[in-house]
Image (tube, rainbow, N blue to C red; front, side, top):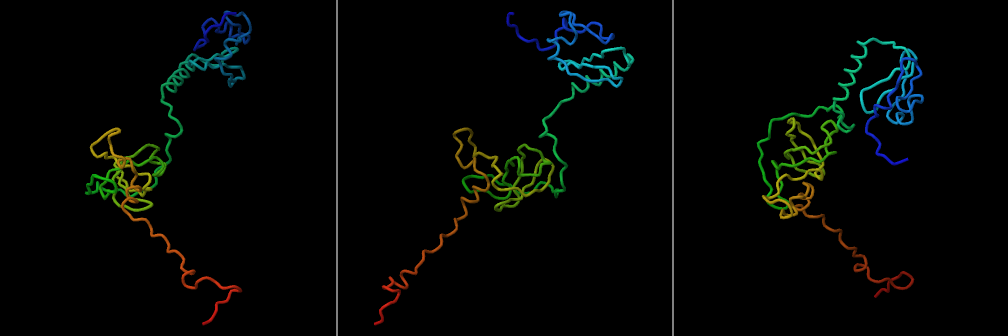
Length: 229
């Protein structure tokens, strides 16, 4: 048998004949329906009257094996519901956000600041908030915000989406300004997080002093005693 590309939809030649009798046959194969070709396009079910039903996986079609237990009005109503469901957009589960908890709402802060170099972050700096920095109710996409209080490990930000105020990790805040340059020409500091900018301007903690016991007491004599003079 020659190889052939599998059709996207159930071919009309393999539709049932005599479905109202309860023992339908395939139009082309003349065998019991669903035939081998039609099986891959159908899902089985059971009607409220107990009869077997088959649903087309690729089109809003349904076959009821046996005498009809519904009217033409029922068919039209069912087909309309199927079409509405087919046209409704289906989003992945990540787009169904949980309810938003209460957050303070303020007017736009009067601050204004544009970073000009490494470590140059201040109140009014515009940042992108990475997904995961906010509560899940605000989604899983980058949000535009203004820094209203600097700190480590968290900063206070004002969200432009709804004017709410949040605390977010400084290592989840990315600068929106690139110093007037784009692409590979932009300096490396334009890709730093707010946490990296703050660490750049704050001195590192001083190293602990070296122990001085050896200098104070000198080398030990044999048997752990020192010679008196």
